[in-house]
Image (cartoon, rainbow, N blue to C red; front, top):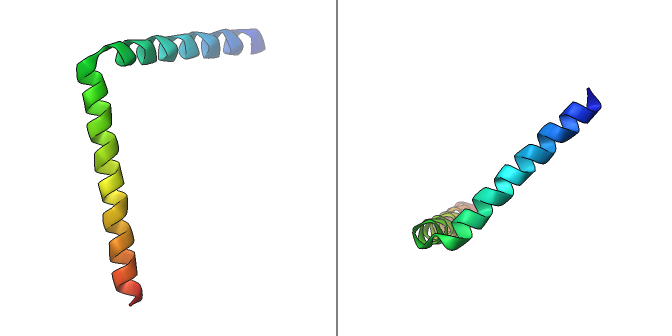
Length: 56
């Protein structure tokens, strides 16, 4: 049972590695990830501003 679980985890990790390699080579995927990171940064900035406003 334990060996099967390790094999499943290893297979999943290999699939994730393959997906990461694909994303690194795909300019559209790179742009999407960068845009999403920008959205998350902006969201955090706005939450911090709102938190500061509520404290004052």
